Every structure is written in structure tokens, then in C-alpha cells.
Image 1 (cartoon, rainbow, N blue to C red):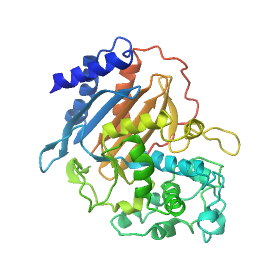
Image 2 (cartoon, rainbow, N blue to C red):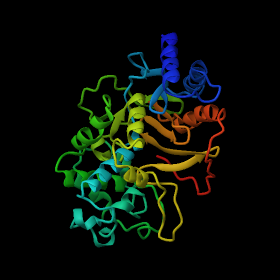
Image 3 (cartoon, rainbow, N blue to C red):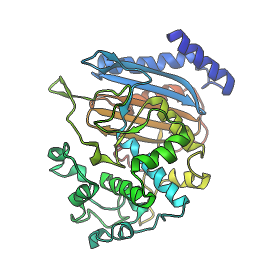
Amino acid sequence: MRELIHSISAFFLSLFFTPLSATEPNEIATIVDAVGSQAVTSESVVGVSIGISRGGKLLYANGYGLANVELDVKASTDSVYRIGSITKQFTAAAILLLVEDEKIELDDPLKKFFPDYPKHGQDVTVAELLSHTSGIKDFTRLPTYRTEQPNEVTPSQVIDRFQNLPLDFEPGEKFQYCNSGYFLLGAIVEQVAEQSFEQFLQDRLFKTAKLKHTYSDKYTAVIPNRTTGYSRWNGNLRNAPYLNMKQTTGAGDLVSTVTDLLLWNDALMNNQILRPETTIRMTTKGKLNNGKPTNYALGLFVRSLDGNKVIRHGGGINGYRAELAYFPDSKLTIAVLANSDNAQATRLSDRIAKQLLAQNKMPDKIPDKTPDEKSE
């Protein structure tokens, strides 16, 4: 099987682009396998799947460890994981599609969609929700969140948790990661599109990007190859605490595979989802009221790794960690999905990227001059 994968990788490499410097297909597999295997054997990660592509063509993908411990099911490239906050770039793309449809403007205030939203937050704009500069309190940081996670909820019940709380700062004054903002954005999509968030994504995003294994997560749904999420407490492995995924709509409710995420990134970055000017807007760093740039665009972080520009987002949700990173100068994309919440998906991605990119002299390297914000 390994030889077959290597031969497929070699075929794609020879047909479509120049390899990363002297890196051959077997070398790429060796690098990825070493990182994935070490995560399982030395870092107590239960299972992890890793996918690498360049220029939209698959270089290598593999799974390590277990997708389900109790049934002894091995992780693979078909394993379906919760992707946590990687969901936010799908939400941002959905909002931007509605902007292109002239149904929403980025400067629209909350009161346009929620007329009864309290006065202190009713002028927060869609752009400020997208860029985490709204000042709205993040409901996942409230003391009651852990006890409320299993509850069946409606969107209004989730919004009621935070809408009456004072803003942490005036809109546009600071960057502060906020799941509440993206929950509101999911509700705005449903209101404006007049269909469920799940169906809008299926019709306008998943079909366009040809995603076959990406879904809105539901406990009752039968999802082929769905992994089980795990936590470690005092060194002991446990099933992750139950979370009703209705509490994460727009902010972290999707599941996917590494190969689907590679397809998604390629479609997004090659303007198959949005118009070119909209994609540029989505991937351009935001600015605060004082003109200072943040490291966040719209649903995506824009950073650098060893001087190489990287557009990325991580994900962390009960029992899962995830990372999707795109290096535009080399058109290299790395997807990492793990089913244990002690996994360091971003570090695994960076280990691979550093080894691959070190063999190239990358053009247009940029320094990372702004503070590193939380990525999940």
C-alpha cells in the first residue's frame, strides 16, 4: 500500500509542478510519516491524519494511530474529524457570498438582523464580527459554559447568554477571539438566505469545492468513518465530554477529512468560491480603529513561519484538534486532524512545513511583526 501511495504521489508531482527543491515523493512521505508516527508513539495522540498538497494536487496523505480505540479502527485519510474553528473560514465565505449577492454589506449593524439586540451592541458591524473586533463577550469563556455544553438549545437561547453582558471594549478598538461573533454570523446566514446554515453551506460551498466528506456535525447523524474524540485526565484516556453541536453553529460545528480540507483550500484560494477581489479581502489582515493591523483577516489568520507567509486557522473542540495552513508563495497546503484534545495540531503542521520549506528559497518572505494571537 505504501508503495502504491508513493507511486501516485510521484505521478502527480511529475505531471503538474516542480518538486519542492530536492524533495522527492519518498522524502515527503518520510517527513510526514515521521511526524505522524511520533505524535502517536511519543506524544500520546490517539489518532491523527495528515494531508499535503501543492498547487491543488495531492502530494501525500496518511493516517496514524486509531480513529476509535474501543473498536480498534485505524486512522486513515478517510477518517472524519471535528474541525473546530476551521469552521470559521466556511462561515466567513458564506457571509461574503451573501455580500456578493448584495444581500448583506460588511458595514451592516447587528440591529439590521436582530432589531431587539441590546443598545450597547446593536451597532457592531458584520465586519467586526468577522474580524473578532466586536467587543462582544465570548460565551465559551463564561463560567456556565461547561455545564451547559450538553444542553439542547435554540439559536436565541445561545444568544441570550451573552447579548445582555457589557462589551469587553468598544468595537474596533481591540482584537479578541470571539465564538459569539461567529455564532451570530451563522444565524445571520440562516436569516438572510432563508435556509439552514447547514443547507446553505452544502449548496453554495461544499458542492462548489467538490467536498464529499464534510458535514455539519449532528449526534444523531450517521456519518461514515466518523472518528471518536478523546481526552486525557491524569494520564488516563477517556471519551471526550459530550457537546451538543447546536451550540457551535457557525463557530465550530463542521466535520471533515484532510483530503476534503485540501480541496476546500484549493477552491477558496483559486477563486472558485468567491470573486478574486473578495478572496483578497478575506485574506487581508484587518486593522483596528487606530490603524494598527491585526494578524486576522476574515475567518483566517495571516502570519509567517520562518519568514514564509502562511494563511491558516486552527481548531480546538471537545476531543479534537485541527490545523489547516496554506503557504501562498509555494502553494503548499498542510491539513492535520487529530481525535485527542492533547494533540498539538499546529505544531505538527509546522514541523512538516519547516522541513519542506527549508529546501526552497522562498520569494517575498515577510516578517511577523504583530503579536501572535490565539488560533482556536
